[in-house]
Length: 360
Image 1 (tube, rainbow, N blue to C red):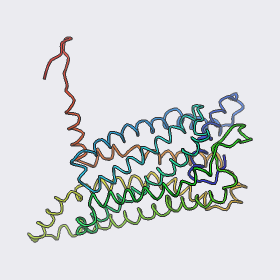
Image 2: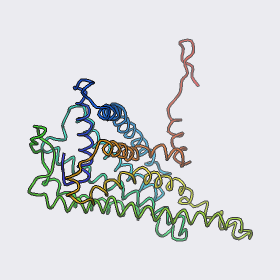
Image 3: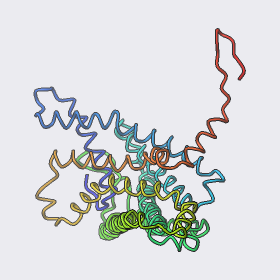
Image 4: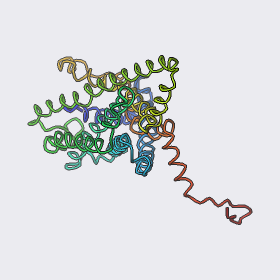
């Protein structure tokens, strides 16, 4: 289905491909080409297993992570504010994917008037906040690694809260146009209502689409890439001069920096940024390619089955980035693991032997 909104169109086209491919199962086996059979099998796997797993595992993991980060110890660091913010944004995005999954199951709730506008607006805002909060995490880590003397001035919880709120205001206002420029419209091809852009707002939606692509794809991806390169260069430089620190004063200064909370979480922040970039960069490149490609070429060359499958796989990789942060935090944050152990120790364990409970 066509739409001037690249983000909405991406999700909807993927959903439509899943449904259309699934409907091909009504054909007899011999009527399906080998390419259609492979597409059907891949789509069925994503439909039946991958999508709901990403949604529900991600929701549970993110909620647990949010509860952990509300603890007093982790709440003191500015980086925790950004991590909490991105967890909330990812959770909101995963909630929007529930409507995509329900459509695959036959419940077209997101194509109802009212719900359509809210869903488009919600996915716009959550995707914007998710990527820009990750940029904030990368900037925080950049300051910690490359400019450690600025940590006390720049990396404070109060400053982080101000930046978080300020970033939320922008997309809330910018994407409010989708509340009246989209609606559930009758589609002759499907013979049912489809959530899409209103024809009279085509120009405005096109402008918003390009602004969104610049703000959520081009600028943040470029910024994160450059910042991560600078961080890697700084780490390599630090390793080279590490052996040259023979003076006692240098060792004391090094030990002082290691005790800084921001320095201790640098590894965790770096892992979050790199993982996010790796999982999202492929679909960002594809989206930019199709957006910048001339419209005449798009009309003459529709997306092939192979291109659709590649886009589907890359799209789900970006979904995984919203669900995987709990596991990255467990792997790279000692404080996070400590808080989990403390929470688990709060649950009493009473082993049962021979049918009788034994108090421990």
